Structures are given as C-alpha cells and as structure tokens.
Image 1 (cartoon, rainbow, N blue to C red):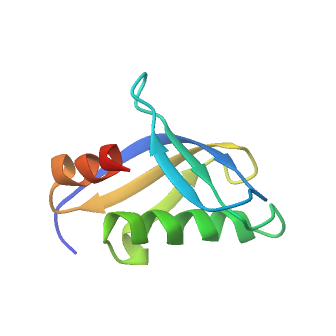
Image 2 (cartoon, rainbow, N blue to C red):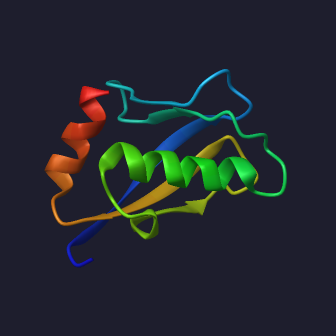
Length: 92
C-alpha cells in the first residue's frame, strides 16, 4: 500500500465488555476498547485488528509504535487518504 503514514494517540481499555473505537473531538485522541485481555500482547493485536477493520484497511496498515505495555499508545496508520481515514473515525 502506498500513500502517507500518520500517527495518532490512543487510550486503550483492554478486557472491555465489547469492542469499540471513538475519536475524541478534544485533542483528537482515539479511545479504543477491546475484549482481549492485556496478556502477552493479545490486547495490542486486537487493537490493530479492530482499527484496521474499522478503517477498511489491511491489518498491515495499522501498527502500534509506542506504548506496548501502556494504556496510552501511539498508533501508526498507513493510508492513501489521511483525510478520508480520519473522517471514518469521526463517523464512529
């Protein structure tokens, strides 16, 4: 996939009751909840998979680049159209 790459801050809630993705209007932070537990990277993998599915991107286009053991993470997204990708997050 060609295109540009951008990073976005996220706050993750592992072991949630359901999976969800929401973009905070103040500060542009993603709030992501996943049902996977924070055990051996399971929640991190679930975050990448959920975000890729939500954005309609391949799993390889979404990766956590900082905060692997923290609830606060930096996620890199590779997309052909950053504006359209962010618009999809705002609709959620």
